[in-house]
Length: 381
Image (cartoon, rainbow, N blue to C red; front, side):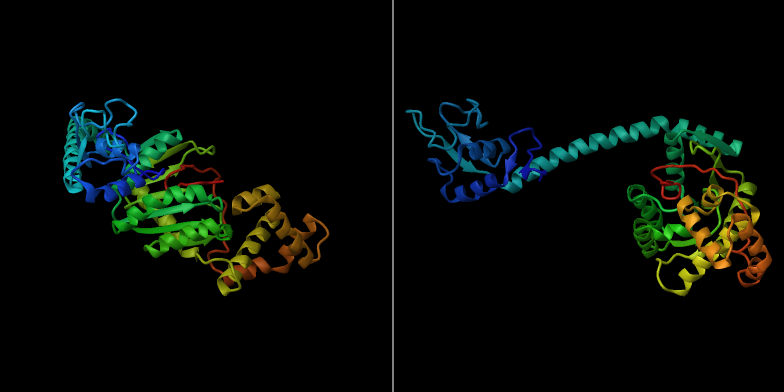
């Protein structure tokens, strides 16, 4: 049934509406025989066109129900002075069987064309794979080409996918687009690990997305550090950013390089915290502490607010709010004094003992790849 509540006749006849089906049911006790105005003319015309009613008329024996174009002879007794049209109900099962046979015939034709296309392109596909694998890496320019390459790798992935997603929360639209391919991979039994930055937890859309994929076996964690986008499929192929404008990516198939990237990911994974929604719990408190400590390190290093915010995946305004609270806590009256007081307090040295690895915030090279349809590269703001 279509959005307008009409049953479309696949054979190109009149569309059937719900009231037409009701008219058919009401006419059954009278048939075979004349209708004598027992149903609306338009409904009868559509029933004839769809094959549910068969009409025989001495003046018009073609039985198509639309001989004069206005259907006025279909439901008012069909009297023209020479006799009345007779209608016979047709078993809907027979109509459905005929249509099913036609649809299957068309489907077989489509499948045949598809198979012939695959056979024609098979040598080209094999040649491309040999070329791709022999070079060890390939550069993809433009989001369309990046998407196509990642979609191919997605379909070929059956064991594991590792993804790093910096930049904070994704939009609801991007997450919705990325969910089907992600669930398809998980449905094939692939394991999935994803790392976000801490502030991704504040997004309702991200929390809903994470909850859904975790229900299907994925694992998600967050870090206070900045990092570049990374996707690794089955530890055989990796996608990494190539430019800061997010329009070029490199597909790497060199085993040693892919292994190196996988080890780097696992190190970040160990430092990361399991994803939980924000709330009054120990994990959230720890994350808040880690974020504040990361900001303290940037203040001591003399970084500007914009640099600090970019590295930590938060807005400049939120970064400034953190710094204002920290300034009040340390009793500083200037940015330079705050850096001095932080260094003098020894809080960063104490942090290295309490939080061994996540406190060692290193600055990654900025720049990322944005691909709108794939779960791991989706939707950087």
